[in-house]
Image (tube, rainbow, N blue to C red):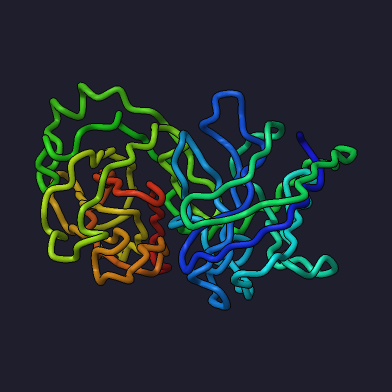
Length: 315
């Protein structure tokens, strides 16, 4: 299916769960669109979630807010109707009320324009009935991209993915290590995200501290790291503020020296912490020298989205 309407009745007695639709599932099964409801979030701002799945990885920590999450009341132990309308690069989810969409997905992000559809249930007892798919004439493919701040750093080069536990993430790359890396040039997408799942396979580590907060400082087997580098040209010696959002773990190096280390993974800062990526979450002050400066990030993944956004504060 490219464009179409998907209808289904659903009922769930579960207190906690995730259920909804997968659509435009590509031939490799690794890239598609997904929209789902969370029973345990009924009535809250993230009761519904849209995320693209890229290289098998969900990106709900990166794509969040209007167009991606929304509030809706989810009935328990009662049948209700779901409808998904897919038209071009947009989609609408209807929950109970078939006149007004509960969630408008204004810009679908996977890049897959045609594929299979599926009912989705990650966890939580869920029942489906009266499932129907109707294709509709193809609508024009029009992207609705968010604005990009002029001071956003958009041109980056990415390293291959490495086992994070075999590397010292607070040590900068040596010149010989950097020269030996086969770097891949990428460009940030509006509003400035570098979504690493677009370029690297999702690692899916088994994170221990999400179920046991006492294990938050333990090594997490399966964690992967990618190095990202860019350059900043400065007309003089100066200190510039860099806003940075990241998912889930980062070290920031400038001209071969570490400036910052942080972790923003789900469940890390407190048991209910979601790790939503935002460019205003953290800031680093860069001591720039006159001329070319090399900025390197070591970005590690623990689930929910792998990426970063960097924006220089206005002078």
